[in-house]
Image (cartoon, rainbow, N blue to C red):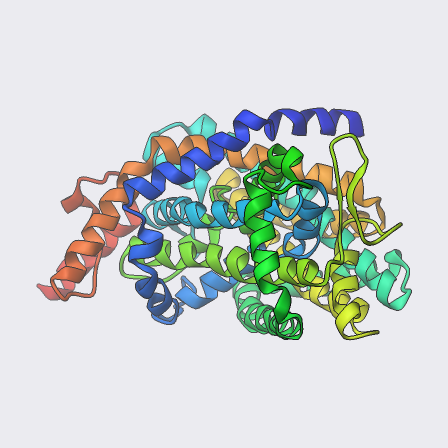
Length: 483
């Protein structure tokens, strides 16, 4: 099993694949004229506009659900692993994929809004929906939906629950099986409450956990402020092979930085597109911009917080490709959350293990919650009627895989997670490359209306965008109300 998964990851995350993902993000950045810089003010303003409705959630709630998925164990364990195998330079490549990935996040989230549907009184959308409606490849849409259910319900929850269990055991000595049972009970309470309960939980937990974590990192940076020039220099020199110690692993720095960056911020993966479709907005580009900013929050803020805590305190090891150590400051310590725990403990003795365990719980648990929402959306697409038996089976499966991940070895959990992510990324990247035009048209339309001093509204027929059935219906109803 482990050999097969490792071989699959070798293909899904090979060097040509890594550079292709960087290239796609750069292409969308150029085509959108680097909207991630031009529209940063709009991104922030739009986060707090729009209200939830019976059918949809607010922009902030949609952002919170997306961040639930993005801000997870990758922000703590993933960053540490990237430094362990790619060196400090991996941090730069995480930043790079976040910056250019924001454009990919805009494209996929705008497409999700354009081609969303109203099902059982709720908005639904995502890659499967825009592949079928935008490209017309139903077989490909079904393939993505199946891959998404496989990844979100079976392959990836174990990574999150495993990190929670490891952190709790290290900090409090609680057996992973007990932690796993607690995760299952709490998860069941939330997912059996429906999308609204998921949205409400996300908007309450996500801002609190992210701000608290970033605040602690700022304290540690201030306490080690004299290290700032050296750490920034080390990150950039290592990223481009200019550091004498880390120069030989520049390929690993790029590979691990991009892989863990995408795992964390999910830009181009298609996951963030699902909650984007649920938002109640007047124009698809609005939520596209909000979702683009979520990539910044995840990687430039939260991932950087972890990286700086580890690098400022020197609490990390880095291995060469042959298994020897380039840096070994933590002898006998396994790569992952323990690096962050050691970093905090070195500044605030006795505080690190408990704090990281609690942070991991909030980060990873909300990610499992988001995985369920994404899997449910794709089950709804596959069954059309939102088959109650299929939805119930999904709830049982994701609770079971979350428990299994908590008691399983972390190496297999991460390998399965990487495989699930890789499959989704590739199916979605192909789709958004083919279907980018409607998202680019929507962006130009949004910008045109903003220049006219209007609050942008979307009329797909006027823009020549076909099969945007929900928006066509809305525009028709608006015309009827006016007449």
